[in-house]
Length: 270
Image (cartoon, rainbow, N blue to C red; front, side, top):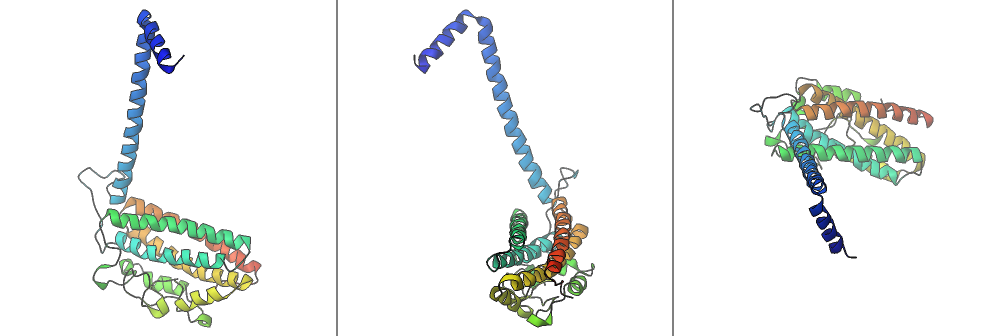
């Protein structure tokens, strides 16, 4: 018996059973309604995500839609943290190939995965807001933190060692540039210099592990200072939530890296 035969038999049976025909039509209507509800739910969820990123979520009125300006804290944080995160991902991939220690490799994987995803969100918001990924008018990195002590706070907490020529607080290159033209390539607080990255590429085993943990500790401290500033200064709720999540996550990793350095009879750089 073919599928067509079955359908014909069902139709014939329903023709003699009005109740079965009614139930079958009711089932079809329920299925169509359920499918429509799922589609609407997905549509509203997408709209809510876009609205939140545009700054008009969390209770803002329909006529209160706001898009951050190019020189706003929201845009500055998105640009600067995207660059900051990119270097963390780079350092994580370097140490992965320089050691066989599973704890360090696992930490490096977690950092690379987390910060690559966050970087994608930050750059996606800039696209959504139709804002440039390079600071306008030659604006310096971290300039959006003015008034929070951002430059000084980040620099004093993340001072680099003289052993590798690191500057700690770093010079400032062209805003948002990945390559940078600051002191030895350092754009922002906590970022490693070109000579430090080159040295990490030359080390192996425990020496590579220790240097990576020290560099990433400096990097996280600079990142935490920036994220704390965004949590206070940014106006887009979704970005503030992301910044607070960065603070919590990186502070937790700072404690873990301090313990890992102690296991290797070392400590963070002063």
